Image (tube, rainbow, N blue to C red; front, top):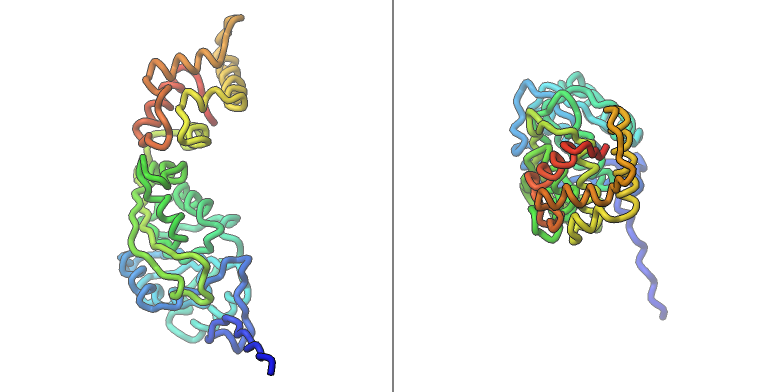
Length: 306
C-alpha cells in the first residue's frame, strides 16, 4: 500500500490564524515569539518613563505591548496593513491605546519623527540602509537595540584584521559605538528564518566626528572595493582615476587654480599616498584613524570624494 504523504501545516502565528493572516516573506516577516528574548531586549534598552520609542516592524505587537508598559509613547512603523489592523485591535480599549502611534508604510521612505530609543526586530533585507538612516537621523537618539541576521551583526562589530571586517564595519563604527548583546536562535521566531540572529546595541556618537560623511563614504568605497589590495593599487583603477580627475578639475575651477599641461592625476595621487606612507596600506587592516589621515591628506591637496 503506497504511503500517504502527511499534509504540511502552514506556519501561521496562532494568534492571527483565525484572521487568515499568512506572514509575507517579501516583507521578511518573522515574528519574535519568545517572551524571554523580548524582555531581555527591552531591559537592555533601559527605557525611561519619559521616553518616546520607535519600533520598526511591530508585527502582531508582542514586543510593542511590553514597550508600552514602560514608555511614554511608542511609534510603530509597519508596512503591512493587515498587521496594523491586528496591532490596533490588540490595544483597543486598553490604557495603551493613547500611547501608541502607528506609521503605515516603508520605513526607508518615511521621514522619521523624534524618538529617544529604537527597539526592533527588523526585516533583515533592509538592515544596511536602515542602520545608516538611523545614524544620520537628527536630532540624535540615545540608543538602538536591533535584531539582525547574525553574520550582519558580526560585520557591524568586526575590527581591523577580522575576516568579516568591511566598509559596513568602519562606516558604522565611525558614527556609533556598537556592541553585540546576545545570540538568538531561529526557533525563537514564527515562522523560523533560515539564519541565526543576534541583537546589537548601537549608540550614536554625539557629537559626531568632524568629518564630511559623504567624502568618508567615498574614500572607504574605494579602499574596500578590493580590501586585500594596497591603496596604491586601488587608486590605479581606471574608474577611480577618472572620478578623482573629474572632482579635482572641478575643485581647481572653483578655486581658479591653473592646471599644468603635463598634469597627471595618477602621479599626483601616488605622490600623496607615498608622502603619507599609505600606498602599502590595505583596507582590511586600516582603522578609523588610518582612513582619517588619508582623507585629510587628499583634501589638503584639493582632492575630494563626494
